[in-house]
Length: 353
Length: 270
Image (cartoon, rainbow over all chains, first blue to last red; front, side, top):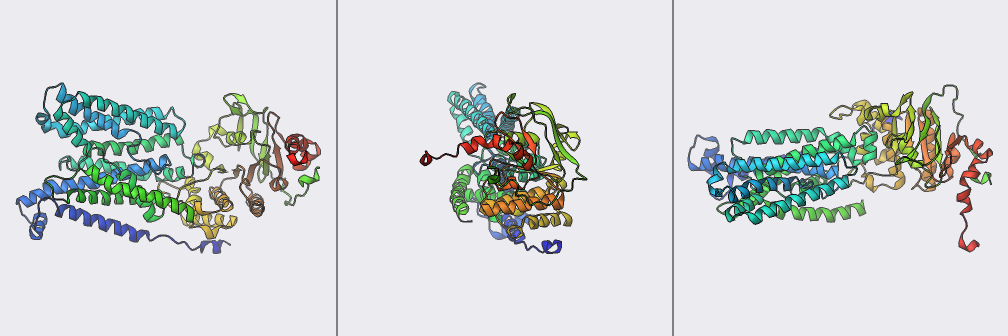
């Protein structure tokens, strides 16, 4: 019986093949991100700028502008997608995303305080604070998001069900949103303008000097997520099964919220609120690999998030505008159809299989 | 009346009573919610290799007792002793290697494979990266074989029938490799042939692998005829335990299930 049992034939989707494909697409998109933009760079110059000792304007466009933007897009895509996957599994809700618990609303509020209040009460126009504003805004957004995260964590220990936790998150988001609106109401035109611009999201706010910090922080969040894969897999079975298999539900959910919230806070601080990546990418990963195993899903989601963010960044640049299209509108434009497709496909899938 | 339950119709092998080791006992246990006990003090015990059925009508407190014994719910007072130590003194990890659960709630994730679910039963035995050793895989395959679902290994869980899903959850419990298995209403959604299969599986686990099984059921059906011992419950009544034969002879089955039988009146009979 034992000998027979070992010969159970397993059929698995071609994981290695799909993975190689995803990574290859990622590399290609990264190259395209460097190659294409508002300024057309001939192939030869492009090559020289990258590998030769060329110091022309082409090189500065690629190295100082396009490269940090591509790296930021890549990192933001990884972080937001993984963060979204964590939320979807924790709340066992396919439409959960990184902003679910009001964390991005918290960062909006933080930015509103700095950008709008500095303009109104300090009497300083935004242009004068623009020197330190990018970094100041980043700090403010991170503090706002982290304040909401701590509040959620504090409240989560008093709440029994996940549903009430989501409701609390949504209420916090409303409160933060309305305070933001009140600030907007009292602010001046310039402040309002730059606040709206921040809200559209951008991958070009991270300088090469800040990049190592940003990259390491995203890496820490992603690795921490990966190390939670056993807990996440067990949570899929339902809370009582998870508990029986040694999961401390309360502590684990706080840990998942902390890691996911950290990634969201971090990326929102540097790039502004970016919609739909965190919602759509985990679904693509699940459907591509036909799996719910987080040991596979977390890396898959990370790489697919990288691909989709780089793709969105490329699309945002496509019309050869002076600047870029707002990244948030592009991610929504591409993300929303994917979510729609998932909803319809899910229906069909549950029925037929 | 008594024979209609088929209580005497037991064809289990004789349990080896000489080396019966105590697995669990309760001491003045009061169960319920918000300090309101549902039934009088519960004093019961489970021995190694026992198949014990927990029977009673809806609302008699079966699920509450289940949750209390499996540490999901704190008792109002009294204590549960598992392998000579108080239940609450075990860490969640320690508990995961002592008893496993088969519940009525089922995973509903779209892409959860049978293999994923069954292998997650192995997690308490695995390290940080959950790498399955040759031996772990062997245990998984053997468990699938024991419940007869090896051919379903790569199927999506939600695409299976109720009976198959039940077997997957039992295989998960086997992989967990615990001496004690709790099954909450394992026969609830099963058709008759699947119920017989379930009885056979439980019998195999108890007699071949020396597992102790406590399962609940809300009616006196097939399963109750095939248990070693019976715990009967009714709302606000003390829990009574004994072999099915004893309980029938003492008239306890009649007393506890009379309300159910009495209600078997249909309007066209009046």
